[in-house]
View 1 (cartoon, one colour):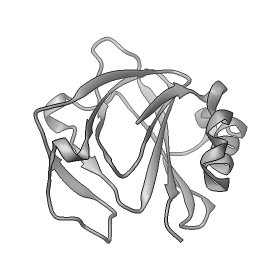
View 2: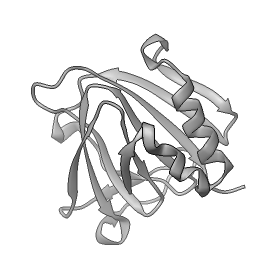
View 3: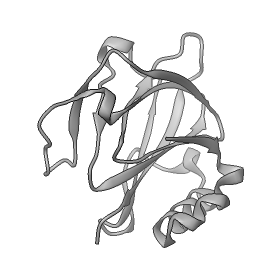
View 4: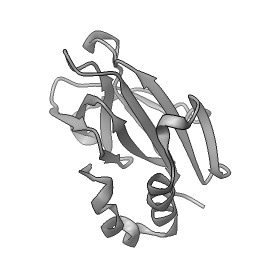
Length: 151
């Protein structure tokens, strides 16, 4: 897991051309003018999900992990709590290949507040629980870029 600012994201271009493309795309867009939903960037290799909400109460935010994609969870506006746990410290459920989703159960985690202009980068070994409401924080505009790791 990496927490950093979009302004400093060029240091992660070394992870490969899809990461370089993802960060360049994030720097080129105006999330405030984009509708909610899926945005194709490079087919299934690279796409984004635009979301706006106030976050979820902790009980409604779900743990997850992925096998085929890394998540770049960029907070364009507002503040969101996310939780992280190394996958080997959690209790993964059965992998759902059609959703690239592994449900997680854990009582060991690190909590982070991701503020406007920052992103959290989660790899397959990173169980994460995003979209947690921060009391008193303004509504969140978030762009999650899904970076395909295989193929």
